Amino acid sequence: MTIDKEKLRQYADLVKERHEVQQKIESLEKQIPKLEAKIRDIEAEGTVKDRVYGGEGGIQGFNIEGVAAPEYDKAIRELAYKKLLCEERKTKLKYLRLRIAETVNEVEDFIASIDDSHIRRIVNLRVVYGMTWDQVAEKVGGGNTFMSVKKAYQRFLDQLL
Image (tube, rainbow, N blue to C red):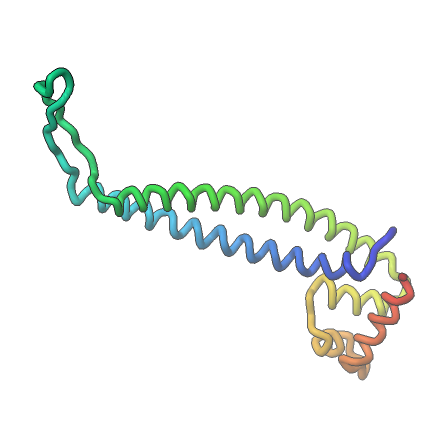
């Protein structure tokens, strides 16, 4: 199994990116109903009705009705954009979930294959749980410092290369 520092780093970044994209989707999903309500409000304020003349010789009358507010057009365009952006982000999130699942399996298989329990715990706490070096040292215990667990991790990775 080939795994390197980049793959381990990517694991944590992919998880964070998935969370960020999910937050953006949630934000957009909150904005969409507000825009829809704004459009309904503009429509409720009243439509403009008018009678215009034209056609053959300008003698035919036509009744027209609609919302004559540039604000309405802007709200409609913004709503369409937000819906499209939300769908694009949902698609990106699906893709990220697939990449994360692949990376998670690869990283977890790699971590499980580490013979040294001490190193396996350090790698797991740092990569999978995203702990700081201080947190890793505290969790590992046994008088380990942030520097000692960091050095053990780095030495282990250097051996992989």
